[in-house]
Image (cartoon, rainbow, N blue to C red; front, side, top):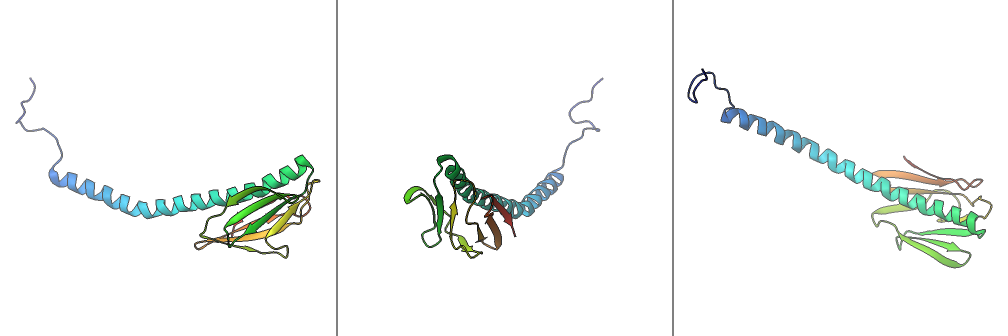
Length: 149
């Protein structure tokens, strides 16, 4: 025969056990939240750097495709990147205001892509919060690379 509702052998959780489990879960969530926030910020910055690099790559591809020299000019005071085909402004893209961007090489804040794929080369150092990134443009091939420093 089965046991009744009030008989011995019935198992369940006490209120104290439930409180302890909830406390452990809250503690784990509290410790994980700052790490997750930093990870999300890092992913956002990585995406912004990838977008900046994509503008440079696109300018190179357009120079080759259209057989017209393209120039990319970074204006850190206006927080913009401008792409010119000859003297015609083709594209403007905003860069985040929290960026500090400097030319690390001697070419300055502008790079020119030639129709045959080469470029004037360039190197940008981008600082976001306490993290630094380097975006380089190879002068021989026009290849754009970005790396965290």
